[in-house]
Length: 341
Image (cartoon, rainbow, N blue to C red):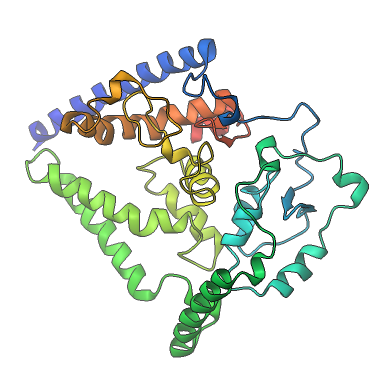
């Protein structure tokens, strides 16, 4: 049995060594030259303010529909992590996308308790000045026929579930007992393949189970949709951080991708490896993109680049440049937190 594990240990050691070397070389390159993906487009860069930023450990400032609020004394159902995602940002898009089941009147009542006074709010500015040029039109959004119809359908769907199961509306939006059982079964099945790692069938089964498990619990927990208890949603992703650091995923997927899906220079998922793939018009064309549909190129992207890039390089790059993929502002971590992530 020991000999079966020797190739695994050797491969792991070589992979880890290669990853560390790549990280060191890439970090050095970033510090010297910076990322050149947006070299010819000043509008695509994160434009930070030269004025004093609102960042403070004593306040949780955010701007929603043009007004500044301070949620330092607000206990959010999503926990402190939910509030941290909009701290020092324009949180309108995230606010609207996460409160479709709550009446606008109730939301305005809650917000009114935490409004920052006029004189103080004028001195505040978001981390990214591009937030002053929002890509969305929020005027009269509450009365927009499409929004009204969509919210009505969502409310009707979950109300029916809540009534049938005799639970609250909030509980109806979270994972059922059957869903939890499925998640634990997937975790157990993945764990059961580990002792056999190195055999031919694990090359297919193990990564497939890993991906299915991630999609069913890791992704949903980071969207606050598994449990009503924010602690469970926050803790579980750290059990199997296979894809990336949970904190980085919040920036990439929740703050960036879901708030600004497919929007030029706002969605970080449009340019994960612009040197190899051009998947959006915001990426400057290069000769290397000619063969981007080649199977070998796609395999390289999804097997090597995604692993090393999402799990290591993007973390360091964001911390060095205070920006995730040049489009999502990122507050630098201290050395201890950076190491842990």
